[in-house]
Image (cartoon, rainbow, N blue to C red; front, side, top):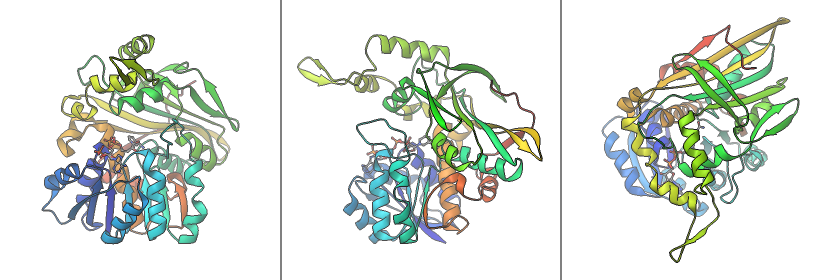
Length: 399
Ligand code: NDP
């Protein structure tokens, strides 16, 4: 049916490639292209021999002419961007120049500021409309499945949704006293930033990790959950009409936070360069170098993730509540695709989003967040391709 150019060869890309090869009728040919070609070749070696034809290429995704040349050579029907958020705009520019559909899993971030905002990518809307091509933004889990869950809840169970609580729990244990599940620099920057939530038309700031609750999650049990800002709050506030409160909660153990506090107190999380033995070093980058590599955690991580959304609203004039969530087992993911659940829960929805576009189910000119499309075929595909979901019509609410 189609050809996909996959940019990036990291944790998420590895899952995307595994999953595309599971659906050769849709993904007839893929090209894995990244900065380090040997990583693309290693993925090809693992998966070659099936019905999906695989090729690899070296590309610097910060460089539009290089991207354009690669797209013109491979002639994909879609570009799946699973490199880093810094490359979103250059890849969108290359798609515009070559008239090819675009998909990503995280919003654009300028290199020099940790800003989680859609404004740069939403500004491409008219250009994509004029070119007659589709850009699907945020097709991971959160953002991604959380938006699909929201569209599904609104379509099937509510006349109006008033409150959304997104709860992202990771009860995985890698056996180290302290390690981060993804890039430590990005992870620590996100957690040490101010929290923010949406209420009555505006965003309200909190101190970092100031707001804490305990939530009893199915198959995981009671966990401390902390209020953080997350990018889908911005698009859901815009696209889920009538919603007046949206919050995002993430679990952290006391042990994790204790280590983080100590590291902060001694200055190890600082991004200000310091002089050390005649050299300038950034403490946080040095910390990253001494912490375990997130990619090495896969084989040793045991336990489950549970990510879902709790809704409150009305149906036929009556109050209604609904909770929809997915549970993912780190070791089962590792057995299936050689990655832990964090990469798995992002890579599977990226493949499904691309499948929706290639099969023509989700196709309209412009730049869209995921909740703007019909959620039903995506929800079916989640059950089929490894992320089954569960429903609870009487959930405990978060006060
Ligand atoms: P990794 O760091 O494991 O992989 C990133 C890949 O991008 C690497 O292969 C890297 O190449 C490549 N890359 C970086 N810069 C360039 C460049 N200039 N040109 C070409 N390739 C480049 O990250 P993950 O796989 O964990 O994450 C991928 C994306 O998924 C990120 O955008 C992340 O924010 C997003 N994500 C989304 C989630 C969601 O639920 N929505 C959850 C988790 C992640 P090299 O090997 O040379 O370094």
